[in-house]
Length: 280
Ligand SMILES: CC(C)(COP(=O)(O)OP(=O)(O)OC[C@H]1O[C@@H](n2cnc3c(N)ncnc32)[C@H](O)[C@@H]1OP(=O)(O)O)[C@@H](O)C(=O)NCCC(=O)NCCS
Image (cartoon, rainbow, N blue to C red; front, side):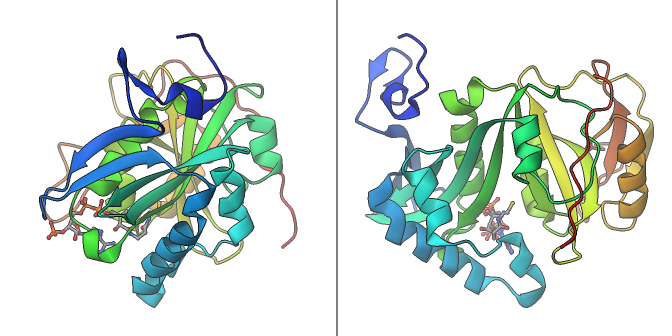
C-alpha cells in the first residue's frame, strides 16, 4: 500500500488484512468483558464527542477540572472532518466511552504560533524548526468506564496511526497533578522535556515528547529521585537551560509514589526558538 496523507484510507488495513472501514482495533474491556471498537471518529460522532467531553469534565473535582479544558464544538468538528488532525475513539454497545484528539501534522513553527502544544514560554531542545509534529490532546475516558485500560488502548492505537508514524515527533501537555496521565505517556515512550505554569490558569504543566526514533539517553542520570510536584520549579529551570529528558526513576519509585530521573539526550539538536510570549 502506498503512502497517503488521507489517514482514513490507510486505516482500513491492519497488517495485510483489509478491515472494516475506519476500524483500527477490537478491544475486550478488562472489567466488564464487553467488546469495544477503537476507530477513527467522523463528523457523525460530533454529538457523542461533545457529550463525552462534558461528562468527563463534569465528573472531575474542581481542583482537577484543568485536566480537561473546555472546548467549542468547532474545535472537535474540524478534527472529525479530518482537517488539521483526527480523533480516535472507543465505542462499546453503541456508546462512545473514550476519545482523544490528534492535532497535526504541524511544523514546530506552526505549533508554536498556534500554541498547539503549550502556551508556556519553554525551550524546545529536541526538535528541528521544520520537523513535523502531532499533539495528543483532550483525552477522556467516561467515568463509568475507568479502569478498563482505555487510555492505554487509545494512546497505543494512536501511535500506530499513519498520522503519527509519519511525523518526526508526538507531543502532549499534561497537568503535573495528573500523575495517572503522564505516567501513561512515559510508559509509552514519551519523555518530559519541559515544564511551565500555564499563563491562563496558573497551573503547573509538563510537556512530553516522543521522537520517532525514541530518545537515546546518556547512561548516567543528571538528576534522580525527583518529585514531580515538590521539585517542579527546579524541573522548569533545568529543562529551560539544558536538554534534559525526564523518565520514570525505577530505583526511587515506590508503591506510594512515582519519582522521576532526568537524563541528557545523546542526540540533541541545539536550542531552538521558544514559544512566543503573548500578553494574556
Ligand atoms: C486519565 C484517564 C484518561 C485514565 O483512564 P483509564 O484508562 O480508565 O485509566 P486506567 O485504566 O489506567 O485506570 C486504572 C485505575 O485508576 C482509576 N482511575 C483512572 N483515572 C482516574 C482518575 N482520574 N481518578 C481516580 N481514579 C482513576 C480507575 O478507575 C482504575 O481503578 P480500578 O482499577 O480500581 O478500577 C481518565 O482518568 C480520565 O478520563 N481522566 C479525566 C481526563 C483526563 O485526565 N485526561 C487526560 C488529560 S492529558
